[in-house]
Length: 175
Length: 128
Image 1 (cartoon, one colour):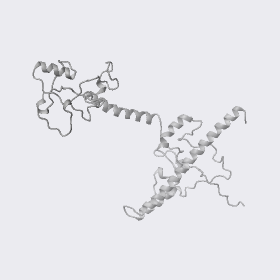
Image 2: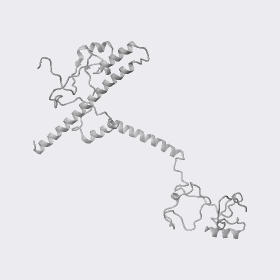
Image 3: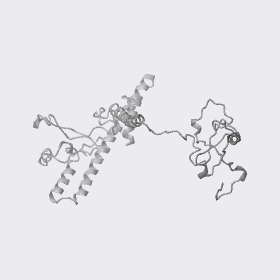
Image 4: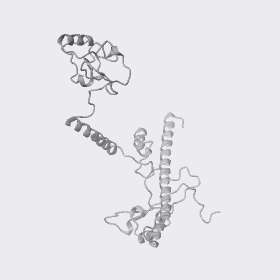
C-alpha cells in the first residue's frame, strides 16, 4: 500500500493492512477494542488507504446517554474508545448529529407562527392595556368650537384664558 | 421615546394621587406659587383672520400667527417654496415652545400633588 503524505506521522500509528480472512478480522477487532460483529472496515479502503481502520461515525457529546457509566464523565468517553478516522473542525462539536433548526413542516410552522404570535401578543398587551404618552398636559387652544363638524353657531365659540410662566406686567395706570 | 414608554409604568407605580392625568386640564389654582402673577397668553390673531385663511382646527392655537406668515410666504412664491422653509422653521420653534409650556404645566401639577400628599401625611401624624 502506497501512501503520500506531506506531514510527519509515526509509522507505528498507521493502520494495518486490510483484513481479508476471518482470523485477521478478529485480530483487527481486538486491536481496536471492538466486538467482531461491530467491527467493519471502510469500503473505500483502497482509495483512501485506511487499511483496517473501522468505520466510526462521529457523534456529539449531547447525544450520548447520561445514564451510562463512562470512564471520563466530563467528556462521556471510555478509555481506548475507538475514535473517528478524521477530526474536522465540526466533528468534535457538542451537538454534532443533532438538527437544532426546524427541519419538518410542523417545526417550521411552530417557529414561524410562534415568532409572529409573540409579537402580536406583546403589541396587544402593551398597546391596549397601557397608553404611552408624553408627560405633558393637553394642548392649549384660545377658542373652542362647540358642535364643530355637525351643528355650530357663532355663539358656540368660547374664548379660553391661558397663562405663561412669566411674571405679569404691571397694568397701565399703576405707579 | 424612553420617557413616553416609561410613563405608564410610573403612573401605575405612583398612582393617581401623585401623578396627574395627562388627558385632563390642570386642577390647581393657576396663581399658586407666583407672587408676581402670571402673564396672559396672547394669540395675536383674531377669529376673523383665522376664518379668512380657512385654518383647520388643529392650527387654531397660540402659534396661528406664525402659520399665517408661512401661508402668506407661500402665496408670494411658487413651488417648491424654498424661501418658506425658514419661515416654517420659525413656526416649528413656536410649536416647540408651546410643547415645552405644556410639559412645564404637567410638572407643576405633579409637584403640587406631591406637596398635597406631603401636607396630608404631616397632618395625619399631627405635626401641623
